[in-house]
Picture 1 (tube, rainbow, N blue to C red):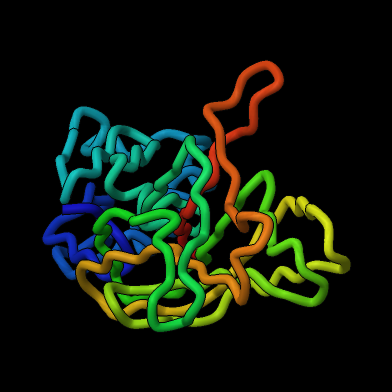
Picture 2: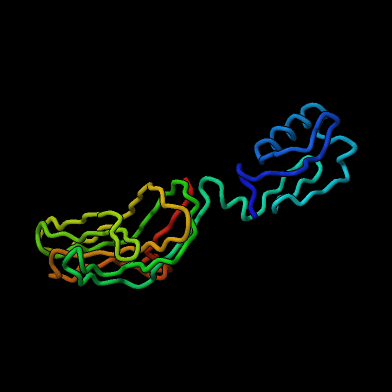
Length: 212
């Protein structure tokens, strides 16, 4: 079990005035910081040899080492990442029948806000003036939002690198999000470009989620 601010610790390394209680990570950090200031970085002698495994967190002398699971709860931690390395032609011409661009995997969310991010090295709208390629964020068959609207300035080929970000709060539990797109016209073969990277090759397109 990862340690976070909700984790309760039954016992902590004990200076004379410490009592068995219900301590979270923030309490442990405050206590250790206080010990460090008072004793020039040394824990009390009664605690020097004590090593405790507290919900995947090791407390050794004057250091706290967070487990990988604990680090995954911190702001900026990556919850999930999916990418494609081949171009997807957009054949869907209606919001109800979009083309899947990135299917997405199932990830666990804890009910806290996240940043969703989508990137493609090049998005090509229809080769018809003022026609659009619309990028959407979906969960299953449910559209979360229209995320990007890329329009042609003229009746010629257009290529537009794109990065989209969206902050929202998924409910706690498993979610499977995906990128889908549709175009108002298929003239000129609208597409979301992607490649494997390397010399003279586009990089992947991706969908990622990170903790706020």
